[in-house]
Image (cartoon, rainbow, N blue to C red; front, side, top):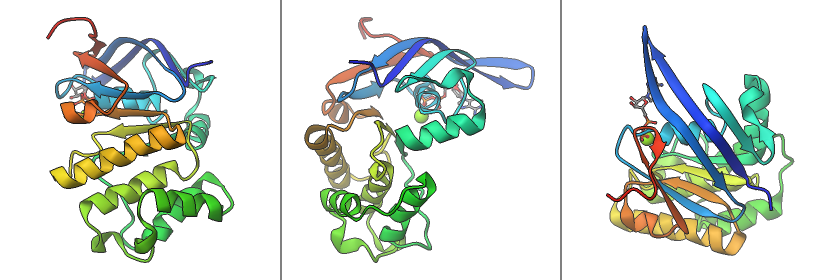
Length: 226
Ligand SMILES: Nc1ncnc2c1ncn2[C@@H]1O[C@H](COP(=O)(O)OP(=O)(O)O)[C@@H](O)[C@H]1O
Ligand SMILES: [Mg+2]
């Protein structure tokens, strides 16, 4: 079995004025199909940067990123964007829903951007799994935070991405809504085999994952005692 994601000695250096600020300092990892991996580590250690580079939202400074066998590190922006749209679903702490569209419209838009024909079966299955069937004609402002995040997750998986990348998906939610969103991610993983990589600060959230990767100062530090 080939990894869905594979990086080797990945660096990301931000240039701020004349100062070089390395956010990733040689990260090597593999994510296999069907894995649910949590990323933990202190604020500023490079978790979001890693997720952005792995998902093709940002370009690495050095090192390769293989996404489902495609090497993102040598691609121009347009090509990387294309691959990302086919292969990756993103969920962020902020839900980023379009306020003028209802739930159905927000999810349909993601299919449209991908260039997909409307797939009623996939749409129904996704909205059912995420418990949104009775909310399809509501706008985001009429939904709870937990419901909005469920719409964001539906939007992220509607095109059957190879991997779902989630950056603190419960960071804006109260405990009850957090638990519901985490239970859903676990269900997507267990029942649909969705490969997931999730950044979290919450040890309980990390416990949902099959593997936890710990980062510090732009590096993976697994094996180093706390
Ligand atoms: N767009 C950016 N420009 C410059 N520096 C950045 C940018 N994004 C992140 N950084 C810096 O890179 C480091 C890692 O940030 P980030 O990946 O957001 O960490 P985390 O998600 O673990 O909190 C931090 O020092 C942060 O200030
Ligand atoms: Mg972050």
